[in-house]
Length: 145
Ligand code: ADP
Ligand code: MG
Image (cartoon, rainbow, N blue to C red; front, side, top):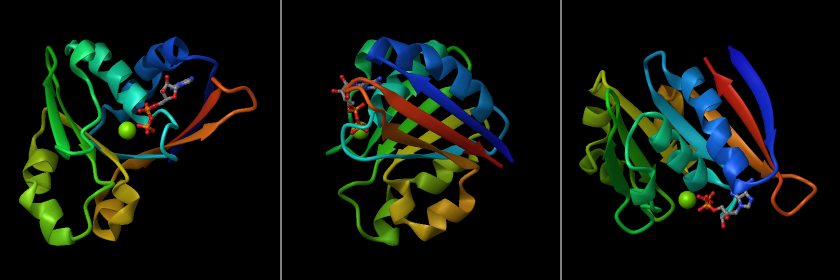
């Protein structure tokens, strides 16, 4: 198990830190849960990771309503899911989560994935994001199996 605690003081800091976190996610399987309150910085981290893999980070927005967004990097594909509004395991399957997980060139990052025990079980790890003392300060606790 790899565990790392990292702190940032700004959105740009989080974008920069994404490189570091992405490298920890590279060994397959690449399903990772992003955990934290609304506004913690989960989507911001995904934006940073999109930039790292050579996808267009400008395009990254929250998939709150669409549930899944897909970005193509130079080598890796990034699937960004937000399951806040999802309730049933069947709905998760119909999103095609198993196909995403099976893609050897994909990174699957899931906000609110902890709602689904089946997903938690298959995840390689999690990034837990919490607010620091200052308004723009965030802690990133990375745990990878
Ligand atoms: P989530 O996906 O967890 O709901 P978002 O990434 O969409 O969160 O939003 C994070 C919010 O917090 C944004 O408004 C962003 O500007 C703000 N923010 C302030 N400081 C940071 C930081 N260090 N890292 C990430 N976001 C930050
Ligand atoms: Mg989000």
